[in-house]
Image (cartoon, rainbow, N blue to C red):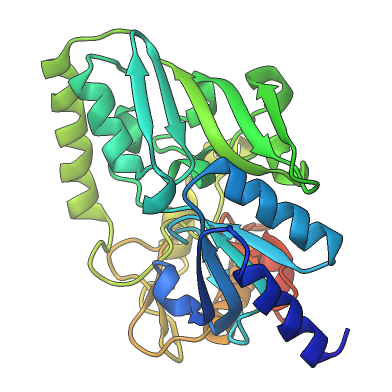
Length: 324
């Protein structure tokens, strides 16, 4: 496809009822790492019908499409995305609670979900109160903290398939495991999730949440652009040599810097943007960390953070790293 034809298709799409459209959107402004080049077209829908229309158009015309929320677990290429970025955020963030069931659209802010559950006297979501991001990404990655996972509470997930149809999957069909789900390979866009939460004492739930937030303030670099935890833990590694942050710190890598990217002095499983960091800086730093850990203790640190290529392909960031 020629560049003129590509631009013509995106212009045609922007004239359909698919939501708010922004051309040449700077992706650094749409992720917590503040890194990334422009997206050809960024679309922010407000209902499922618009998402269906968008997915159908992109599929029919073979246009690359990347779905994001808050961008809190993503590293965008310095070249941006040569296609469509579908952003599910505040415009697509309705939430309803009925008895022990919570129904949340993908753009719901995660800390807000935890607080709404607490106010309703529902427990089980305390561990997500400090996680920046949106529900769609949390479910897709089976995210959580303290080795807990959102998938433990999922009853049903609603997707929009590439051909624009809706599909409902049970928790069993989602095949949740630690920081993974079958949703990642499904090709569908998570648009809604139903959670079943046990009842609990509001005051006790609030105290647990406040304790979690206090711990985060003391442990994590909350005021410097970052993506959260960069590397995955594993049961075998954790039992043998500890979590990634401890392993990296013991290698003396706190403060290691490439360009504007730095291993946080506060928590070694965080890479912070000290100003002007590029995706290339981050990938080079990840490569160096993995090599030092591999050579020292024989464990391979795989990435939790996902890299988004200019072609719209998404995968663990270590797969995009330069060869050491």
